[in-house]
Image 1 (tube, rainbow, N blue to C red):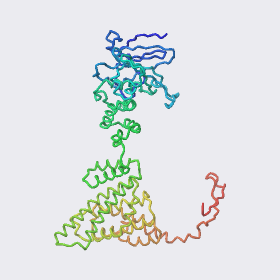
Image 2: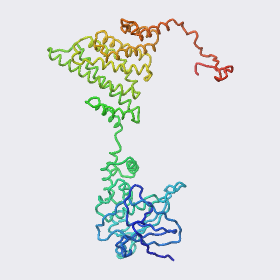
Image 3: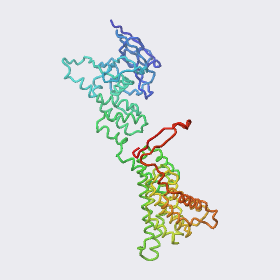
Image 4: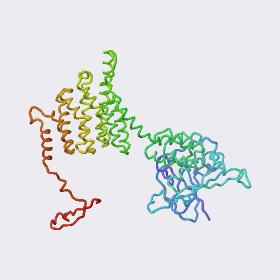
Length: 542
């Protein structure tokens, strides 16, 4: 025979099985009895006749049965605040209840099996919970409304207490979440009860399961309107596939973008910092974003796009400046030329920042190739810098463009950017005359700030020339005679370059010493035993 005992619990000793993991709000209506047998817990509110007459807030009726299963109280507090009742009958009121709802934990075959690592108390079997509820409140859920429909009753009785059982999955917090949702059926003000993202995420799948539409709508509105942490966003993403298209559209709009949205965002940031008067720390921030961005391919595509756009503006401005087709009176012509020079100067500075970022990110190969294929642009620069009209308008224009050249050729000379010999040759061939014009025509005076730039370019051009085939190096070295100074000792880089070329020119042809398609190479097996050798056949296909 079953024995019924009345046990009272003080607020400090109340616990719940399988508490929610993400909240710390206690629920005074939930009580867990500690016993060695499986029990059914009937949770009573403080104002229930079954409760103790003392000031203790709640009591629980525990019905012992024969099956033994230990309980493990969870010390985590209830995540859901107790809603204020608005109906005449309150939640879990035995004196007026017309529905007896049993929540039981019944593992489904689809649930993941327990493992030896599941040692948490919340992962252990839980007690069944019996709640005294009211049909008018339960009918807010269409699931219960269908169960309570008279069409399922063979012999409907007006005063009979209906018994309903509801399966609860054996997951941490599942029992508490369902009890919290049932409490919300007695509260018309959901906003006062659901105040955290964690609570909304816990309640939403249960409300959707029981078709509590008011709660589903409120949870979706709440989640759409408030910020999320990264962990909460992960939970939202896991929840979206279980929602309908109409329910999920607002959440999807926050976490999903167009296929090219990342590229457009990065491109917009680059344009913002280059085409506006951005301060240095803003450019540093965007540079940090580019360095830490996950897709190097996307960064390279965006930087190439920005480079091409900016470089095109510079080339068009210099082409218009040097074009003989400009007509009009003197004042109009001068105004147009000023605009062209300022446009070239401004975008040249943007171009320098882009080149530096591309080299830093090691995505400047296409920029080097583009810079090496500019015979028309470098010809425009030579014509412009031989004139004096620009000097009082944009005196720093030559140094800005030569700094771009210096950054690119240094990256090539150091091996940071690897390009073919033809690209290296054209890079020197097109830009070496610009450097010579700037020096010979005093385009930008050799002030202490400009002299290191010119010397660096001279040395770098000579280093690149040393990497070219002998005929190409011979052609380009003859154009470098202007690097010489009155004192030969002041141009050691030029002396070294010519000495290197002549030394190589005196070497006899090596064609007859090359290995044939099938050669026998004798190599030592190991450095420690030079007398041991191994024969290795090398073929043309190896």
